[in-house]
Image (cartoon, rainbow, N blue to C red; front, side, top):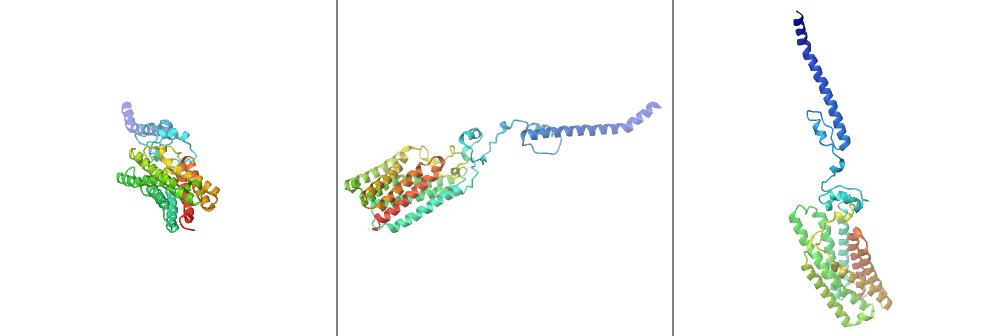
Length: 345
């Protein structure tokens, strides 16, 4: 009878004991899983809180790795530290597929709007030139041509940054912007040397001695044309232009929001005509001021020369904007001088 009673007890209480033990084991497993998950959350800072299940132990454990090995490599990388230097950024650049795509943390419309304002200012200048030039010459034509070239230059940079942000993934837009950019370089390169003829004519009007000679005037004309041709021959032999890649400026540089093209192989020779033009304006203006024939023309020529020199002399990523501003200032100074020289005032 005793064995039968024991067997009955086992049959009644056995499943209950086993069930309670299973519940205890399950609770223990859940507690351990919670501890592991919490550790993963603290260690990796990325593990989300999840419901506990059969695979809860293994899933968070896979994320237990040093933060340094999980550096973000997404593109674009959102960096809002405007004071970060290039040296500080080098470790992060290695982890980014396209350093040029790094977000500078600024509104994307600021940079192209600046170029749109330059365009508007130059349109005003060329509109005023139409009324200011009463006695057209080769010099006045060169002044108008360069102003028009600068309008195109700033306009293409502006609309490129407004409407062609996706050229990395849109081959058709890439080709359109590229073909629109070729005249930027050609008009600018041809026109800038020719504007030296404008400076020579203004200097002659203002009484600069050596510019009174017709031989000197002709020589300047020939030299300007030769320099323009040599520049374009050099460009024709080069690899051409490509989309500008912003891999050198600091992360916070405003120019990172510009979408434009530049020379594949930048060469100092390409900027020589601009340097000659800026210095010519300044030196001829100083000589005209000393001559005293027309101080007003002299002062505006000096203003034009200083605008171009200072604008293009500013360092780093500031130069991207100040250079074009300096060119607009130069054209404004020459507009005011043209009112006197070509307008018969």
